[in-house]
Image 1 (cartoon, rainbow, N blue to C red):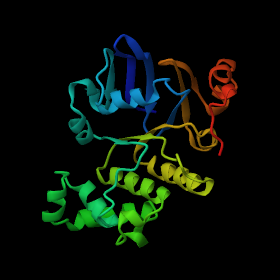
Image 2: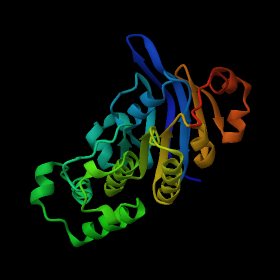
Image 3: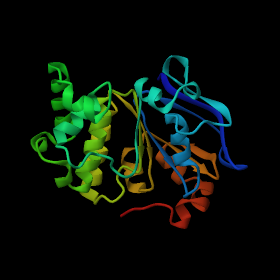
Image 4: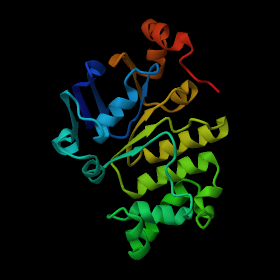
Length: 251
């Protein structure tokens, strides 16, 4: 399989503390890769590096076509095909579901442009298709404030899809969800992965077991283990520093 992202010897330091310490890994196209590990392991910081929020002290992150993301701003990285979703949904609750999608799909992503720039037929068709994929087409005229927590998460994933990313970064996308919504989210990610590679930071180990293509375990900023879910959860080092200390959330 072809790699979409190569992380090579990446180190991030904050006042001498190495939040990420010489991390090296490769992400294949079509993967649903999970980054797991204890709190403070460097998972979210690594996402910050990939999306341009944090610049590494050393090492490189290379996207498709040999693009070194360190040379790009956070906004520019969005435009080259890397989308990021944070743990707390950041939808516009005063707008309808459809209006949120329109805003996300505009090249100039501002509220002004979404109001005064008419959506093209092609954009409307894409929005309708995405809303169908995320299960919110029937609720497209409702305000986002009326959605459940899980539906807001799916809407934000849909808003990322409207930007047509090649790589999607998700930080704890099932936090606060019940099992039914969690499973629906997992099935949604499987659909998305046909066209968009996904990296997920997550603590819910049942979710990881059910939907991960491959798992990278981080500990104290470094890669502790990497491989299939079966392999990493039977690695004694992983059990000792994470799984065996109540690190997983099976609710």
